[in-house]
Each structure stands twice: as structure tokens, then as C-alpha cells.
Image 1 (tube, one colour):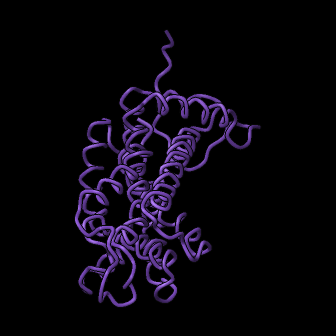
Image 2 (cartoon, rainbow, N blue to C red; image 1 turned 60 degrees about the vertical axis):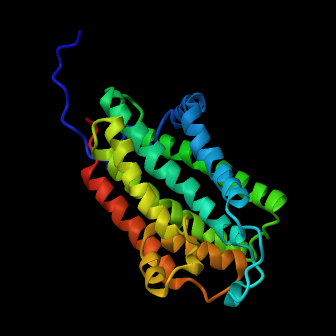
Length: 273
């Protein structure tokens, strides 16, 4: 057994070995993380299938969800389930970013994986990139699945402005994954990361319109929702989906501020031990 004293915790800032560049072995690490995640059927279900199950369940169980709205201003003629579909993308983002991502990172710290990785030729940030990549892959699969089922089974229209939708997605993901990175960066137990993540999860989904579609919220609540990570995302996606309203400038500013601020904090507080 080596008697070398453990090194001090290293900052999150990029590090490489002398003469080495980038993140050697990143592709192999991503593939390994993908296999491990696939074996975790609970995480796969909640990230991939839960948004679809939730949308279909609401559409079939709640009266009037599939009936055209009357006297609803610009939303007249649309169905309530139509307005809920962009929210299901937010559900996939929140599930991956606030439950799966931080829980895995905290679990790795709890088992000493992060400490051991920090001593290998792989730049230790590789595990962060790999975990984020795996969760991103699965949340995109979950989002596409939910939208496909909504369009094919529930007769939800496709988005009108794909460009705006694709501009919204990276900021929506960044604003939530930044929060997850803070949780996973400081908490020492997976159970704590998962529990705190869930405490944040439900309020953010409320502002995203999970219980009441954002267009149906009172004006004051809509304004507050704009400045919540998933609230701004849901509003921008709704604009992209149905082409109602001006370009969502405030929503983009909100998501941008959340993304920059949370990642800046995560860089400062992340611990490898």
C-alpha cells in the first residue's frame, strides 16, 4: 500500500498533465458511464419515459385536456394538452439535471471515485463531461419520445419555429444543469443530492407550468415564472411551438443569467473529495 499523503482537493478549473492536452480517454469514459446509466433502470425510466407517461396520463385522466379551448384569446382552438407538451421537455431536463446528474456525482464522491480520478492521466473534469453527456443523451431521447407520442397519439401540432426552439434548449439545459452541478459538487452523499434536488425539482416544474399551463397563469405569476430557470424555458418553448407573442427576450436573459451564475458558482465550490 502506498504511504504517499493524499493530495489537496483540486479546483474545478481545467488541468492536464505536463505534455498532455485535452481529456485523454474521454470517449471511453463516456461509453462506460452510458453503460452504467443504462443498467440503472430507475434513472432510465424517469429521464426517458416519465415525461411521456405523465403527459399521456394527464391527457387521458383529466377531463377537458383534449378539448379545444374556448374564449382563450390567442390560445383559442388549441387543447390544454397542446400547451402542456413543451412543459414535458422541461420535465425531462429537470429530471436529468436535478435528480440523476447530481446524485451520480455525489455518489462518486461518497465512494471515493472522484478522488481516485483526480490522480489519473484523465483530467478529472472528464467525469463531469461524461456524466453531463450521458444525461444529455437520455434527456434528449426522453424529450423526443414525449413529443413524438404527443404528436402521433394526442394530435398535438409540431413546433412552428424550430429555430427558436433549438436556441432555447441549450440555455434551458444549462440553467438547470448548473444547479445540479452545484449540488453534485458540494454534497458528500448521493441521498442528500437526490433529496435536495427533488426539493428544487417540484417548485421549478410548477413555474414551468406542470400543474397550470403558463398561458393560463395570472399575469403576476407569469412574470415571476419568467425569471425562474424552467419558467423562462417553458415560455420560450411555448412561443416557439405556437408562434404566439414576440421574441422571448426576457426569457433568454433569464436563462442566460441562471446558466452563467450557476456554473460560475459551481466552479468555485466544486470539491473532489
